[in-house]
Length: 385
Image (cartoon, rainbow, N blue to C red; front, side, top):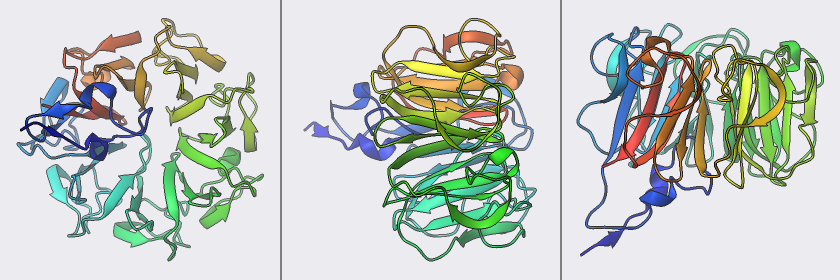
């Protein structure tokens, strides 16, 4: 008999209603199969296809059909299965694969034997990995030259190491050389490289262990670009800080900020993501907005003009998930279709070519995409079949 399947376990980077997409919800004759797809550069094995070949259209990784989340961290890739196991492949020069070495792997390898991984913090320019488990603990590994692992030193790690002993972490985020985490009490914490005010602590000092950002207790989501950060609060407001030469903070100017500053006065912001020098966000009404650097049309506005305040991408109201990489953006709509735009080198847009596009283009014809993660020069996504 048909069964109702809990698709929420397949939620990706961020989704509008805390679930994958509206089309996936429903009644199926059996549990669906969530396949993992890749495209773009394979130079460090990040394609996961046992080679170093570039692909300009989606290719399935292996035969496994039980993937729940996928994350691109520069040229290193991570995925979590529904059973809570964590897998990685790609570049490992700083030990960022978490496999206890600096060996590159071109197909997924399991990290340890634990089965309680919840999420990985993504940033297309970072070589540091921040992770959270289902028990609320916080973990880190990889590059640590600026203390971005939060372990009180600057030593690289090639295996997961717990940050402190707390079990109250609820959300995580990264910029290139800094990391951020939110606790269940709504407080925000940061550590790593503090130049340009990227930590939000009112200075440009670097810290190798978590420091609380202000005293507020209503932080909800956070994401970073290269040196800037965007975040939302539980009241739906949008905030930013850090490097702002290209207008990535959305504040109408190009002045750096070392403490959180509210972007406009709206209270309808939901998901956020940071590109290298730009930002994007989806509102609760399903509209998509972007701002900052736009050299390759990565803002999706049909031009290459830079904007220092949020601009709406088209007029559609069915955007669901969002992921910024390195001058490119990928997004899934509520109808399960996948769209990409921006820098097309290495085939990272999945459109069968290496062309740049300044407005959203649909990737193939599937209507069962659940999540997408844009990395430095490649992209990963999950679809139900």
